[in-house]
Length: 121
Image (cartoon, rainbow, N blue to C red; front, side, top):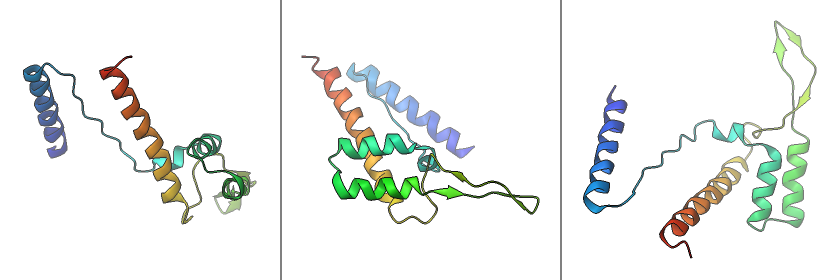
C-alpha cells in the first residue's frame, strides 16, 4: 500500500509543478526486472549495430544467441529441445552489459524526443 501512496504523491507533485511553471514535465518509471528475458535477439543485434558494435564482437554475440538451446523437463520427461529467441542464458556474463546498451539506446531516444519537443526545427 505504501508504494501506491508514493506513486500518487509523486503524480500530484508533477501535476502541481506543471501547473505552476506552465510546463509538461513527466516521470518515466521503468520496471527492468525480468526485462532482459523479453528482448528479442534480432532487436538486440540491431541495437548493437546502431551503437557501432560490429565485426568479430557482433559475430561472437550472434554465435552465442544462435547456440542458445533449452530443454524442459515435464513430469520427469525431457521434452524436445528448442532454440531460444529471446533473453540470454542465466549467468551469461554479457547479459548485464548488453542490457545496459539496450537501455542506453532507449534513454537516448527519449532524450532526442524531448529535444525535438522543445525545438521542433
